[in-house]
Length: 247
Image (cartoon, rainbow, N blue to C red; front, side, top):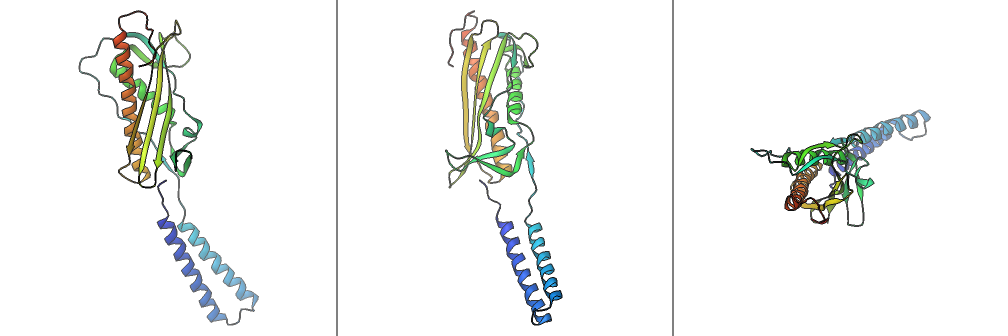
């Protein structure tokens, strides 16, 4: 996890020094502290100093978005290979969709940033990116989000498997993983199933740097996943029966 303790430590030190100065000054002015009014005044002054120190340590929540660039459309639109398609919203492990940005202190541990959250559920971001990429590739006659209505010829389902910051002590990296499949809605046959992953080190050690690298790696993973899908389906066309499952 990226640390933000320097400013907090400095504020605490400053608060302690001011509090000590208040105690010494009150002691010089009042002599023996056996007067209830003096004791009350000292307590009030120390309380104000402590409150000021706490205010100096306040952090406010920050919200972030995954910014995936739109795919570049070919100058000449390709002829569609298959009919209409609909993309179900991608699934994901619960810890990736609870709101806070996720980091892993080790492969066996999961942590959450307390003040850094996603504005939009990463599942929706990935689903929208897949739809844009599929439309740009021209694999299907049309590609729409699946809403439970209509009769698309093919259903595309997927999972966001990884979207985490990985800390190994010496460096910070990002791990992104996606998997998906294409189903013939009429026959129930799986035409293709594949996965894509991307790992890269973070150049800028800050939360914005982590988010920027996540966006870049997620965009690459989406592109690789759709490319594998296109390769498999193109190789099988124009054969009517698709018997292969793995890419």
